Amino acid sequence: MRIDIISVVPELLHSPLQHSIMKRAQEKGLLEVHIHDLRHFGLGKHRQVDDYPFGGGAGMVLRPEPLAQCLDTLMAQHTYDEIIYLTPDGQRFDQKMANRLSLKDNLLLIAGHYKGIDERIRQHYVTLEISIGDYVLSGGELPALVVVDAVGRLIPGVLNDETSALLDSFQDGLLAPPVYTRPANFRGWEVPQVLRSGNFKAIEAWRYEQALQRTRQRRPDLLLDEEAE
Ligand code: SAM
Image 1 (cartoon, rainbow, N blue to C red):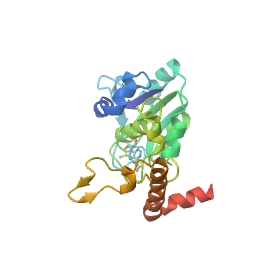
Image 2 (image 1 turned 180 degrees about the vertical axis):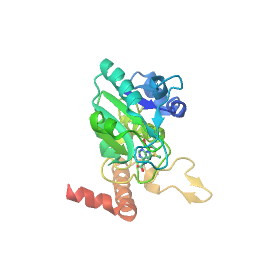
Image 3 (image 1 turned 120 degrees about the horizontal axis):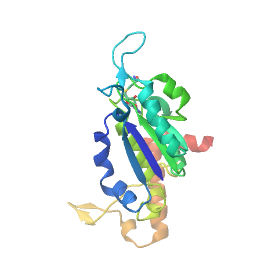
């Protein structure tokens, strides 16, 4: 999968992609992430990318011309499955959307800044708008990284153990069960006996029961969602 990200603060994007699973995904050739500095398409000698909002009010808005030029350049080279704008008023990002996006080949993400991007870019270029939650961040770089990570780890071959992602929270409409590692006894706090029993059927049943119980207690809405489907 190829993911392009357009940003006015590209420096924010580099480090999280250079470590751990995202680094391995790129080294294995399963994920390519290309970061584009919007200022390269800025106007005039100051490479201006923003301007005052029509109608007045506080804050700046990302102008349409640099974004359109950057998008046109990229779209002339690649066919994108989705052109995504990260925005608080977009569709709420969740595991289902991550699963769906992980099946795509080419994604283009636009990270906004200031008050956001000129509405005409949203109307004429963007095919999907994603919010990572009901709060406002300073820029779309962290949301873009959230999407890249959540989607990237689902690409077949990225995780060493394929089944690991399937057992994570939300994959089957349930939260994940508790996990333990060595030592079996830490300060007198024992790991549940069943997990040390070697009885895989019993372990699976225990995990399912724990996942169900945890979901009932913490996120009963997930169980209602399942019933509704
Ligand atoms: N004026 C916008 C509003 O009230 O909806 C908020 C703009 S925010 C300060 C600047 C940029 O951060 C946005 O253009 C968007 O790209 C990104 N952003 C902030 N919060 C976000 C969220 N919850 N989900 C996705 N993107 C977000």
